[in-house]
Length: 207
Image 1 (tube, helix red, strand yellow):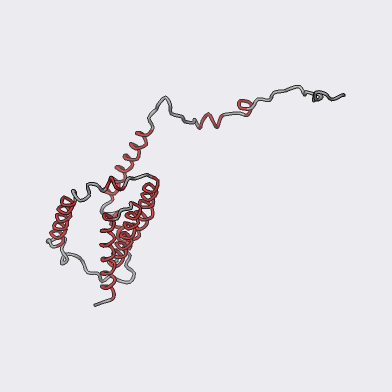
Image 2 (cartoon, one colour):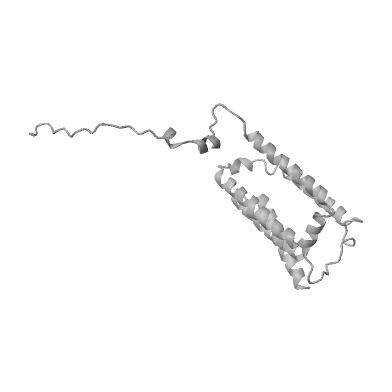
């Protein structure tokens, strides 16, 4: 058995065990940390498949951004774990059926004519081959219109989210940057001239 094959089996085993711990851990913070471990092992498998761009994107986007935000949210919220796990075993048969259905679909896709192992290209690449460069070339040449369409859809989603949060309410407080910039010192500062008062002698003391 080759060393590369041993590394693949080790990473796959750790990823599967971490995925199982995500759904069986009692503490939500521990479940999120196990999900981070699962992502790291999957990125290692991507590196073995010479897909370094997907491996780095998985670490930077999901582990470095999404999971960190999720961890902060989970740690700040007061989650009643016992209440969430009350109907865990009642939903287990349905979850098992969905999981088996997904495994069957993946098996049918991978064993098919177009997505089978025989249809995949060989892994022997030249020394100067760059997976990221090849992906960028295809993305901005053959798939430039779907890429631009996806960016427009994301932009519309961002604008819609901002507009939904900008509801004008009576109790909302906001600042006008234009008025802040145009303000002058005489409009915000008032100097009052007050007469100086002399200290009065204390009671019972002579002058």
